[in-house]
Image (cartoon, rainbow, N blue to C red; front, side):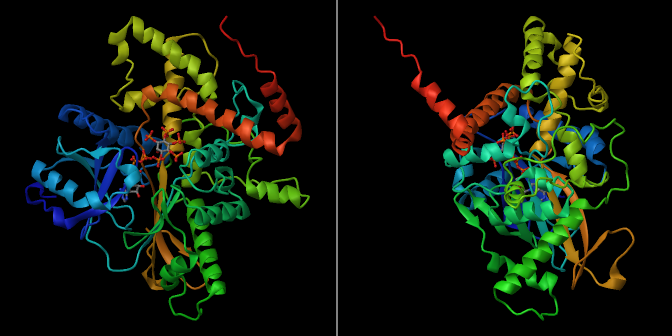
Length: 491
Ligand SMILES: O=P(O)(O)O[C@@H]1[C@@H](OP(=O)(O)O)[C@H](OP(=O)(O)O)[C@H](O)[C@H](OP(=O)(O)O)[C@H]1OP(=O)(O)O
Ligand SMILES: Nc1ncnc2c1ncn2[C@@H]1O[C@H](COP(=O)(O)OP(=O)(O)OP(=O)(O)O)[C@@H](O)[C@H]1O
């Protein structure tokens, strides 16, 4: 890219999260990703550059090892003319959702990341003229903690996502709870996966987005502005799934198209498209912990129908969901077992602050950093080394619990499909597709106390407001506790 000739009119707003803002090029299949920060908390250019270098290194040396070469696009750092960045920022400001405007895009350093536009099938090339559909899923944590450090029994039964939903609705983040449960999506069982995907389509929140030819056509632009009209979605999708028409419009047509979409996403999520074997690490046994969540609507439906055995077919080893789950399961001790180890590292750093860089707490995220992650033992020998390994593994797990999966698909003719590109079939179409993972920025060491506090808030809220209402015995218990509160008055 010729940075001297950058023109803001060739770029448009694409999307943003809590940490970064993304613009896409109108002709080329590239995006620029800028860091964001709260107003008046601007970092220096050196700090921004260091942060971006860490993100690139982490993708290149660590996450590629966990996920496999083809799934991760680490991108590169680019230095842009400040005038271009300022003009771009002004241009896109009206497009930004209000709920994200508590942070500003960095316009002072001139640094950004340049990445392939993953809503397109091909990377670093001009926009293809064939239609492209892209589904982005933020699946969140797909397992129930198996650690013996867990203090509340409910955490062994109900997954964090399902518990957190109640707190989010109470806090006003979302209007309605979602029926999506990550354990259904990660189950590998097609029926459960279909249910999970249907639930995401019903209530996308920030877990599902659909792009057509690079434009967002389904999902939440803003917390308050969710597009979830299935008829409109079906209208967009009809040329993909029923190219030669045949299907008339109406509710039956909509249902059929949505079913095809769910089927195709399931197939792609279960496919193993990466030839390179990811990670030479010993993997965490996938069978640990329970494989279903008691709060899942799918599970509740089964129980209502008198069936008590929930199928978990398991995931094929090479698929992206499997790799995501493996990385998530590096959280072996749960935040409750991890927090005391974090405190041990903190205590050590208080005594020896100069050791912070040797311990690679803020990078560099290189080969040596990766090697230290491979020790999966959970036997605590009381050392700082043990505590640090668990802390770093936990940070990787948190990153994998918050990443997004991108699936891009494009119709192809029978004789067009090459051996290099995987193909998925539906009743009337065939597609080439690519699968990748994004938002793999390592979660900061400093976020651990926040995680600890949030975990306890999520559980307390659930026990008090949801489980207690479901369970009359618990409810009575809470009531009793409330009645017995001892109030001490000053005398
Ligand atoms: O804690 P969670 O599970 O709510 O996850 C946060 C996400 O909320 P979600 O529950 O997905 O709506 C949250 O997403 P939103 O900003 O709410 O879209 C962020 O991804 C946040 O990451 P970071 O701290 O900004 O790096 C995420 O925080 P981390 O916990 O991953 O640091
Ligand atoms: N390489 C890419 N190609 C296409 N779209 C992208 C790419 N990277 C990011 N996006 C889009 O921009 C959005 C925001 O990016 P990203 O998830 O990296 O932000 P974030 O601030 O790090 O997220 P979070 O809130 O989870 O911390 C994504 O949800 C996705 O829709």
